[in-house]
Amino acid sequence: MRHFDDFQVGERHDIPATYEMTESELVSFAKKWDPQPFHIERDAAAKSIYGTLTACGTHIQAVVLFLAARLPEETAVLGALGYDEVRFHKPAKLNDTLRLVIECTETKPSASKPDRGVVKNRHILMNQSDEVIFTQTTTLLIKRNI
Image (cartoon, rainbow, N blue to C red):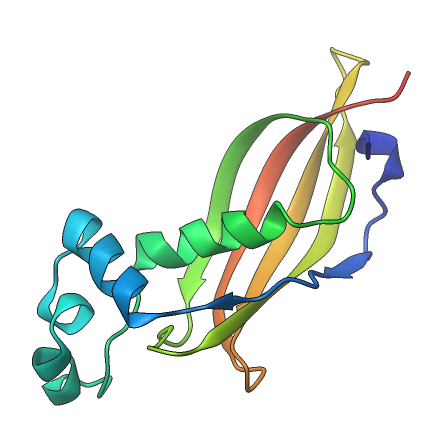
């Protein structure tokens, strides 16, 4: 179990798991959460600026959480405090294979509650060509090992 004091600013984790964007999942997710034609209809997607089916933003964020949960060591997270600097750099397209890199950018022990601290991580989601698809900063409240 990783605790607050185990995090070091500058550390980087290349998550070994990947995630493939299949047509059935792209369409089923988007039909429920963001039914834009370029997310759910192959013909409409082909005529769009993307040229193919793409994942909706909520789906991309769900993939980031799915991959982050594949870190080899569990983290003593007490809660998420926020997602900032959310950016969609390129579309996640049909048949893309996505991978996640997590970089620790800040650690701050709580001044009022010594049993916890705040960690900021940068999430970088890339496709099979190492193109950056999505980035965000995640702020987590993490238990200290005291």
